[in-house]
Length: 200
Image 1 (spheres, helix red, strand yellow):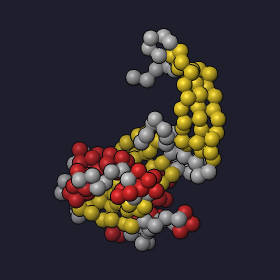
Image 2 (cartoon, one colour):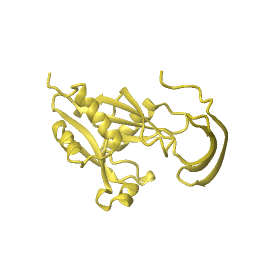
Image 3 (cartoon, one colour):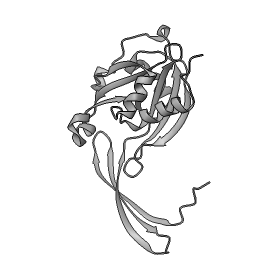
Image 4 (cartoon, helix red, strand yellow):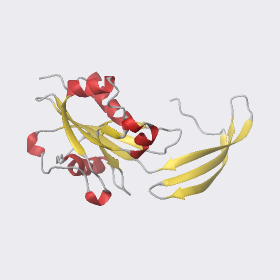
């Protein structure tokens, strides 16, 4: 494995800068570089917990279920990118398992009740700034699983549009940079590489 014991890291101190929706910490630490020199470094670290996301796909119809919703950080970065097309996803609460989370989020956000899903990837989306690790799932869906209109929870101020798209269209949206959410791109490319949506 490429990982190693962190013998080149010591004297870690943490200062909480903000604790609103999530926690922002300043972490100071001593780090030893390859040349043997030790330096005192400081980084800000945003801790919002871990998350789970899922790509729902239908082999017969050659379609996928995605969502569209407003994302303020994306809007802040580029006013034309505030509306984000994404895989269904949610934060993992307390002691919930990733699978439990994604089964719940699937019903809340897109209105499909699934009984199981396959975890295919795990990834940090921005390890230089966020502690968040995403657990990425896939599951097949069909119309018999539709139990509600979805759209998210009003109590969480969610306003989610549900998109059922041909898989080829979703891949085109990635190529055209209309889908620019990392977890969604990873899941769509996983489906493409593993030929999940080749008609049987």
